[in-house]
Structure formats: C-alpha cells, structure tokens
Length: 49
Length: 562
Figure 1: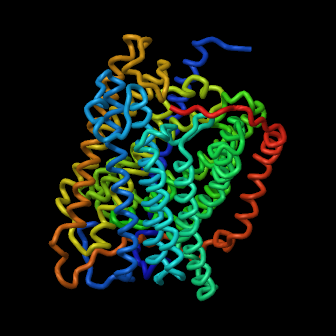
Figure 2 (figure 1 turned 90 degrees about the horizontal axis):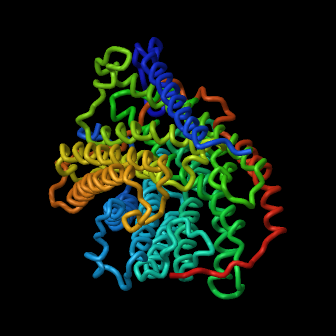
Figure 3 (figure 1 turned 135 degrees about the vertical axis):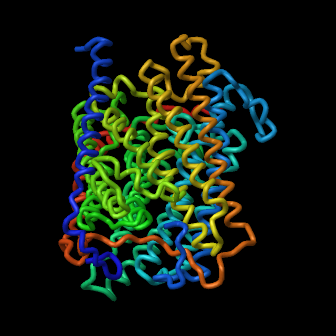
C-alpha cells in the first residue's frame, strides 16, 4: 500500500477530502469571475466583425 | 521534515553523485543571482528610476535604451532558461538515483551532458555580456544576435538531451531488473518531464539549426519570421511545463512527506503526468493568436487543446491539496479550510512550496484567460503577460526550487541549513513582493501597458498607469531582497565549515501513497501507448500547418542588430 516501504495508518480509508473539494470549488468560482471580468473589458472595447 | 534527521537513509547517494548534483545547483544559483540583478532594474525603470547608468561598469558596451534590452535579455536567459535547466537536470539526477535506489547507468554520459551545458552557458554569455545578443529570451527573428549566442543555446539544449539519455538508460535497466514492479512515481514523473522536453525542443532545434544559424552565419540573406515563431512556440509553451513538472513532482511526492502525510493517489498522479506528456506540446499557436500567418481555425484548435491541458492541471490541484489536507488533519487540523493552518509553516522548505502553490493558483487563472481565443486580445503583448509569467516560472517554479534547495543543499553537502528561520522569511518576503508586483503587472496590462518596453522613457504613459508602475518597482525590489536572502542561505549552508553531527543525515523526502502503486493500472506504467499518442496528436495539431508554412517559406527578412 505504499510508494516506499510499509504504510499502515488505520484512518486512511476514512479520509474524505472535503476541504479539498471546497478549495477546488472556490478556485473554479474565482476563475470564472476573473475570466468574465476580462470578457467584459473585451466587450466594453467594442465588438469587431 | 527539513529539520528531521535520520541515521539510516533509505538509499544514500555516493559522494561523487552528490558532488555532481551540487555542480548543477551551483551553476543554477549563480545564473539566478546574476540574472535576478536585472529584475529590480527593470521594475524600477518602469517607474522612471533608471539605474542602468549606475552599473555600466558591468558591461562592455552600454548605451541608452539598449541597456534596458540587454538587461531584459540577461534576466530572461539566465533566470528562465539557465537557472531552470541546470536546477532541473540536477534535481532529476538526484531523484532518479534515489528513486530507483541505484546509481546512474552510464555516469560519464551525464557528465558529458552537464559540461556541454556549461560550455553552452559560457558561449552564450560572451555575446550577452557584450550587448551582441540583446534579443530577449525568445530571440524572435528578424532580431539577430551574434552566432555564438545561438551556438551556446544549442549546446545547453543538446547537453540536457544527453543527460536525459543517461536517465532513460538508467530507468530502462531498472525496469529490466524489476519487470513486475511499478516504476516509482517520482522517477516516472521526472523522466516523463525529460522525454517531453526532448520532443518539445525539436521545434527550437529546427528553428536554430534550420533557419537561424544559416542566416546568422550569412549563408542565406534572409529569414522567415513566421515559420521561426511557429517553431519557437512548438518548444516555448511546453518549456513552461518543463519548468513546472519538477515542481509538481515535488508537490506530489515530496511535500506530503515533509508535511507529515502521504500522497493522496499514486494513480491520479501518474495519470496527470502522462496527460502532461500528451497535451503539453500541441498547443503553441495560443501564443500566436495575433500572428497573421496562422489561420484562425488552427488557432482555435490550439486554444481548445490548451484547455485540454487544464484537465491534468486540475487533477494536480485536487491531488496535491488533498495530500496536504490529509497531512494537516493528521496534525490536528480542523474545519473546511482551518486545516491549512495546521501545515508546518515553520519549515522553510514547506513554506516556500506552499506559497509557490498559492501564487500559482492566480497563475492558473491568468493562464485560462491567456488561452482563450477571445479574451486573449485584451491582454496580448501587454504587461499582463510577464505578470502571468512571473506567477509561473518565477513563483510556482522558482519558489518551489527554493523549497527543494532548503533540504537538497543540506542533503548533498552533509551540512545543516544555515538560519532555518531566515529560510521561512525569505519565502514570505519573495511571496509578498510577487503579490504586489504581479498584481500591478496584470492590472496595468489590462489598462493597455505594453510588455518589453522601457516605460520609464515612454512619453505616452497616462497618469492612471503611474501608481501601478510604482507598485511594479516596489514589488520587484522586495522580490529581489527575498531572492538574495535565499542565495545567501544556500551559499552559506554549502560553504560553511559546520557539518551535521556524526551519523546524522538529511534524507530525501519521498512520500508514501495512500493507495498501492502496484495496483495502478498497467497502462499507467507503459511508455509505448503514451509516446505513440503524443506523436500522433502533435502530427495532427501541427503537421498541416508546418507543411503549409514550410512549403510557403519566404527567406526575405534581413537581420536587425543593435
């Protein structure tokens, strides 16, 4: 069960990365907000055809 | 952890191997130190404070604006190309030996590769310092440098290839001896990076050997800048991954151990690295969105492929953060985000890498904007781009390499880290400077400030840029202080007389995994399908355009020199 040597932590099977899921979700939300803020700058400078 | 010592190392490198790794780090840090000198000079110049005339004794030739571009070229070449390549090949040497628990198969091969890189550095440095190669680190034709500059770059790249061959043969022999064992993830990761580098650098090899050198030597009168740029960016974007993947390898497979935890998923980690091999290369046109010679359809395809590489990036974010969360909760961390406080922030090596990761979150967000075919037009060729670039190579990579150095230099020298608390401080200082600098660069870029321009001399700078340019100067100067503190710490550590107590040893941190590597699917430990898929995807994404551009080649542009 290891990369090297032996492991044996009894809590490993119970570990649920809830904080990580929240962290990644927050990342995606911030990413979308920042992307759209630049998109609005693009639109504010006028569309080209 | 950094401060942990052991009396029974898992596998100890020979003195010769440690010395060899040490040579890499010596040249890397020397290049970083010289190149970084120009960082605050660029930043202060942007705010109208021109210190170049004060240091003209350092240059053989210096005059006015040329000094800005000479400084910018030295900064880019030494920090983005030399510091990284020397550090990465040294780090890879250590990881391969330690990960496989055996010496290099043909050590002389790696020695030849390394000293060829050194010869290349010296060869390129001559015209660089003489202001005969002030063409910036991208060396776009028709700007033309002295021939020695290009020859030097070729030697550095070929030297790194030869070191790569040494790693492949070592891994190949290990696999022959261990046919039923999964390759240790950390070795797989750094060797995938070397393979990706070797495929990617075929672009710049074709550019220099096929187009630039015949032109620089006067064998042909002109060059095709469009084809040159296409070849350059074949290499240029995966170059960023060449820098990043060793940092990722540390985040995945070393940082969890340093933080007191384990790698969350060995399988996910392997998958992410194979996907980086597959997707890092066929996306260079997203750097050429405003190049008139590349059809819009191909730019769009490369834009989509760039979003494809976002997938292994997100896998990396999830797996690394989950590994850290596991470690933090083992250390008593609580809450949805409160566990972050439980990480070992007092360890300089860990702190540097955590701060690198935090800065890279913003780098990743900016990268999505860069890759977008539409919004890229807002930021293309503006100060946003070097702002983003500093969040990748100068933050995620460089700050991670600080962290790695804080255990690696004690490991290879057998000497304790000098002033461990200063190591923590160096990273926080650098991080603070980068926050100020990169935020200002992104903001002033969105306002339209061009990149690669001595704005301190520009008559058109509007008042609304001034505050941001001042922050560029402040942030850049703070970063330099943090960097010099890092250089001082590793230099004193390496050259001090004090040694670790007899029998004590600082081991290479290699994390165990929560899942069993032996249970990873076989296809995640096989090279052939991934290499074939990588080549096929490159042919599909680049082939038609390369054929079109090569058939339509126009060697009409003369060289421009300063």
